[in-house]
Length: 633
Image 1 (spheres, helix red, strand yellow):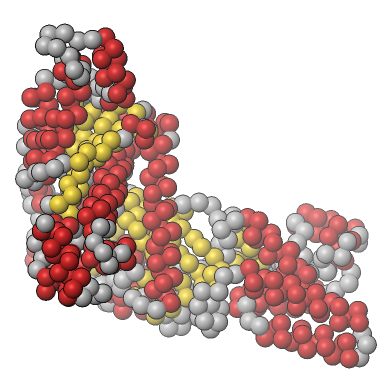
Image 2 (cartoon, rainbow, N blue to C red):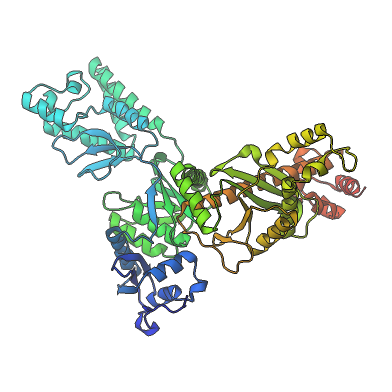
């Protein structure tokens, strides 16, 4: 493939001013829209030698047949124009945000003659004011039930309302006293609108001012012996207090913020939005992102802001982010123009907002894991993934059984490895295995050792070799049965063997496979940086499409092997230091934990001097001498 793109403009033709650029294909379709503070500097990145580009960027620029740009005055104008064109043209290579679920909202149809409250999952009702999103639909209904006790506004649908107004007979809610809409004849349009405005005001601010006013009215009515009015005000106060109690208090009462958390890997990202009003979490919203191109955190935040806010969903005065984007000032100016007031972007690093960001990040991490699990567990997607892996690796059949191996260690100590098994694209956790490696020179040697040990179980002659107490040339049937039972779940031949790593790891695995004499197994490795698939004796990787189910499945197997290895390594490290140090008088679990945190492993502690051990918090000179002598004994 030539590195020269026929449509590349001359460097001198590209302006150095802010602007928005668009890549088009042969049919004129816009493939990608981007903005730049300096168009020449930004576009030059796309026309670098093709072999140096990420695979997704390379695919985009080779699919395109032309690039064009529009010069604007400022970064803010570039951001506005980029947002408008992304919404208009929906370019396939731009970040695509998808709600990870359909959230219910509480909506008040202020555009209607007699506004009503309703539960909806549809955004965009003309003239409606939205509250939420709520995590569960029952939470919306519960809120409405409580609010209607304080503000009995219309809840009936338009057909019932129209029928009631034409017939003069109230709707069912009006007949039982749950709705004081105009059809009941108890209130006028103006009075109903006033109640709706109070409803909207309280839901928007959750200000206790209204509760205080109703409490005072209750006391005044009771003093005047108007007990019926006092009872109604009491019920209203209880209902509004119940609404406030339903929201978790996380910040001070005067804090109104939107807090975003992002968890991502090479292929996808999960975004969690916590909507905090009056110090309480009023709603949670999530998006999933399939990253077609390799985007930076700054570009992801830009796209996230464009998705979250528009003329119907305005930003609050403060937005908390995991980190500030490069164009934070321009983004603040664009949001301020959208909201009609100043908007501030902050990166929470300490304090109560940082603590809430940790909670949101944990939610994003869970959402990303769930998204990948569901995607790889879907039967249709799973079948397609196995077929695509078969085609990409030129296998004779689909890899119905796959085994993946990963190595974990702490600075060369406590070396362990893991084997995870997937059958029909699903994990078989009962067949996972862990390996302890006494000595190894590096990761490639570790891969060679564990595969040599694993493949030994697949040799036809291994039954005789493993039989205990058998004379040369003879094997007792009972002995064979014992060995066979021991290795029952370890004897199945995998179709595909995957190692975590690139060419060196694959070469080590190939050597172990060749020495074992086992045939009929396809071998590959997955390199984490670009998610490339490496085959033995190949100078070029196999590139699976970035959003393909095949790559998601292989990535999930690799991540599962990594998780399993890390877990075992941590358990073994903890047992090591506990067993070795537990026998020393005066050294309890708390001090063992401090020593582990300080030195990281028993091996490092063994080579430490008495003075270095004594420097550890809670370890004095006498105890340090005992530890040093015990480890050297």
